[in-house]
Amino acid sequence: SLATLYQYDGTEITSVPTAVPKTEGNYTVRIRPAWNQHSTGDEPFTNFTFYAVDGVTGEVGSTNMASVVVAPKNDPAVAFNSNETVYAARKTLLHLTGTAVEDDTIVRAYISRLPNAGVLYFANETEMGDGVVALSAGDVVELPHGSLYVAYKYTGAQDLPENSDG
Image 1 (cartoon, rainbow, N blue to C red):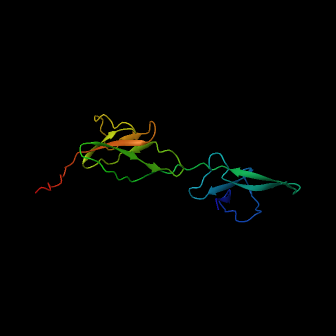
Image 2: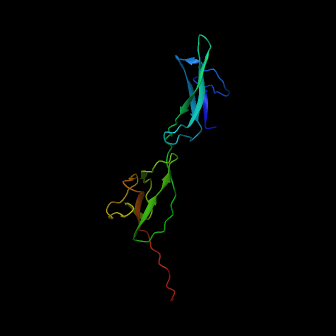
Image 3: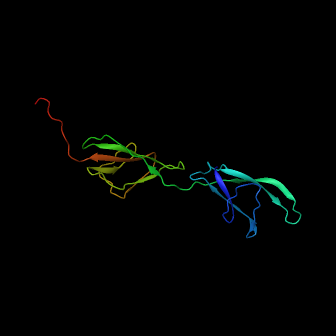
């Protein structure tokens, strides 16, 4: 089921027709969508039908439909792991990627820990930074245009292969 319908007091509506009691001058029901379920754009997520009953005559009115649009809850984005091959003393462009349940665009990344042997620089998809503005832990990489990028320059020990000539 996409959603569960409840009386105003929280009692689940499990069968129809169900009389809805008057609460605070209104006939109110609540709806709870299934976990991580929501409308697409402004399209109704779900709907249900109801009819009103005249309180004096008991006459049943026509059946009407209530459409429910469910706005997505802002679930946290999920960052993807990345494995990149880099070369010593040369900047390498790294693409920071992730996803959001609501298909939102990932617009920033927070640098939570710096690499042990290297320096991160602000960058974009065409420029790897000028080498002056190094990132620090806690810095934010914003999305001005396109995707999220940083430049990484390895500064650790460089192991050279042994000479095969002996």
